[in-house]
Length: 238
Image 1 (cartoon, rainbow, N blue to C red):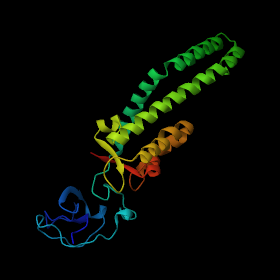
Image 2 (tube, one colour):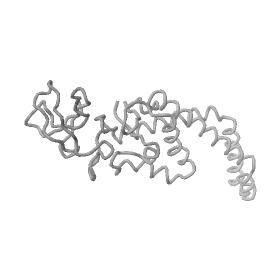
Image 3 (spheres, one colour):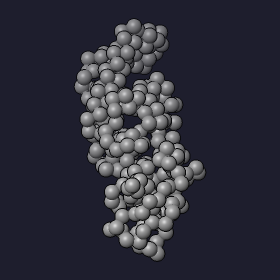
Image 4 (cartoon, helix red, strand yellow):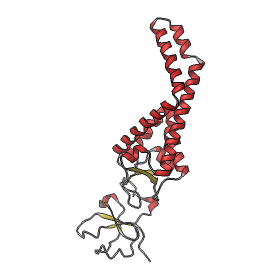
């Protein structure tokens, strides 16, 4: 019976207390400090012979151990850094905004024209004209149209790139990928849609939620944002 994947004492250095990931057939390059991964029984000192039969104290569903922040998935893929994830998010936001501006140029022009008229009326001291301009049904309609265009562009941009490439352009630029916590590979359709709903769609409706969503990985045990938890995904390094 082959040894199951898991964290085992690093056989390349018998004096080290680090743990190295065994993927079920070979030793990988993923190494953790002893206190950052589940402790295991003694592994063989010969890295080429493969480990003997050893079992981790925690199954993958319970990794990392309670009170310990994960730095990798259960199969040893390193989690993405929060700074790189923020930069990737900024790049994606800029790209989506540019595409949405081009696609929704007509309602955006209407909004700009109405706001210019309203500001000119206000500067001329005609407060009533300003109130009338802000309350125009045309402006409300244009705003709804542009919001719809922005969300549609965001949905197509996010869902399709994640499903077929495993990363948005921003994440790909910084060598990040999105995957399921328990298994490698691209996320499924439902996971991609859930990530978009849990971030961009809810963020448009509840601005405070968007801020909380971005900050959540700072204290989360698996570095998951709220939309990651909804989709059961994590961001990893490529």
